[in-house]
Amino acid sequence: MELRSSYFTGRPETAPHRSLLKACGFTDEELSKPLIAVVSAHSEIVPGHINLDKITAAVKAGISAAGGTPVMVPAIGVCDGIAMGHAGMKYSLPSRELIADSVETMIEAHRFDGMVLVPNCDKIVPGMVMAACRLNLPAVAVSGGPMLAGTVCGEEVSLSKMFESVGSYKAGIIDKDKLDDITDRCCPGCGSCSGMYTANSMNCLCEAIGIALPGNGTVPAVYSDRIILAKHAGEAIVNMVKRDIKARDIINPRSIRNAIACDMALGCSSNSVLHLLAIAQEAGVDVDLNMFNEISERTPNLCHLAPAGPTHMQDLYQAGGVQAVLSELLSGGYIDGQAMTVTGRTMADNLKGVKLSGAQNAIRPLDNPYTATGGLAILFGNIARGGCVVKRSAVAPEMLVHSGRARVFNSEEEAIAAIYASSIEHGDVVVIKYEGPKGGPGMREMLNPTSALAGMGLDKSVALITDGRFSGASRGASIGHVSPEAAAGGDFALIEEGDIIDIDIPAYSVNLRVSDKELNRRRKGFTPIVKDIPGKWLKRYASLVSGADKGAVLR
Image 1 (cartoon, rainbow, N blue to C red):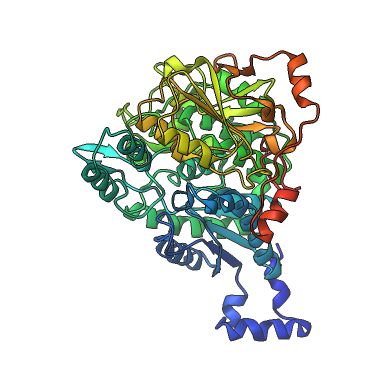
Image 2: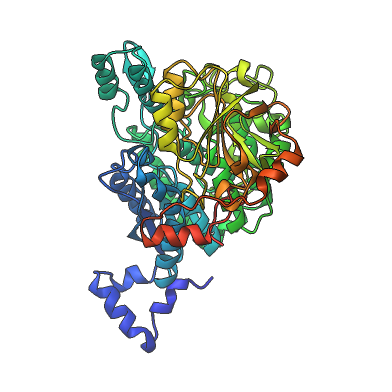
């Protein structure tokens, strides 16, 4: 097989290119080997990324040991927790598209033969994987690993506890000293936040889809096994280049269905729906929201990690990790074992001999699931004709079916002010409009309002529905991604204060208790609110972005 990078070697016409590469310190011997990009999102502002310099170095060592030439190239990354609750969150989801575009640019401009993707946090993982699918070159993903849980008064805690504690403080349930204690202890070090939030969800699903080595989702950031895994990732990419195994050989209809099934078993973040839709589109795989319900309906939920339960990623790791979950699913016929992976072997080959550790606090066996159906559900109805998403594994049983009066707000800020002012009552349905991909713009995560409700003890009596989205750390009846969104003229925009909203998660439905005649009356003369959009990039994004039901990708 001829290497893409061989364009630079041996020909007089490419002598100028070689001179520039030699200016970087490359030798002729290095240029004769596979040229591998190590796409690193290392920075000093994201807790999940502050250790990626060490992961990058280990990947480079693995590439060199296997006979390749590693080259680090940079990528950006946003910490959703730090961006939460202010205008910065508008940039989080759009950053996924920037990452995909920039990775494509760097790889194509410099004719790399393959790439190792080194992300960790929320949008960085899918953005890089989208680029890999788009380029269809050999690619391996290796994350920085999850953070260990913190400990407060002998209890394991994580970021979801931190945000909920703000609500508890506002409600007078805890004092300032307690709030400060949780602040100091909930995030003890580097890594992606320790619950089954979006970052860990996507890193786990990279294993399930086959683009990452076993262990990628769960080996803690601070364990030496994470460095060893990174070295193996470097070795794996050289093997893939030599065998010409490309991204789309791995990410295809078979592996996408495997990833969705694993998603349902793990109880992943609702954001995983957006990202799997986007990855599937880049891979040329036809996926719609109905497929998620189809797979959810027949796939048992085996895990209740934070925020759905008390366990964290380190507990999942000790129980056998994602591979143990996949092994259970394979034994029950829920996944396709013939899917190819970056090991160069099939999923079934990788899972030979894998089993639960016996510690069933993090992973339940197939004969004792939390529920017979998956952790996510897509709801449809007259205010969400294109669908909306709920993490049902994090919904209290009493809220699976709920009817309540709409409390209507046109922004996250308005809603959080009302919640903090204690104006939301038991039984209400908080409605937040104009926070979708186009209307926000950027489809902000709303961990603040969901956590405030939970911290005030309202998560078992109040629902929240929005065309925005939620952090994986959100729990309760938090329904997001309503499509069509309010800014696009969706009927979600027609909800009025005091309307009754009927939610039936087991039946996959959400409806406004208003007649079609009344909806038609409200629709006449209706004009969506247009927000002032700061910055050129967000204006471009708002004009080009698709709906949440299509993955919020740029058209």
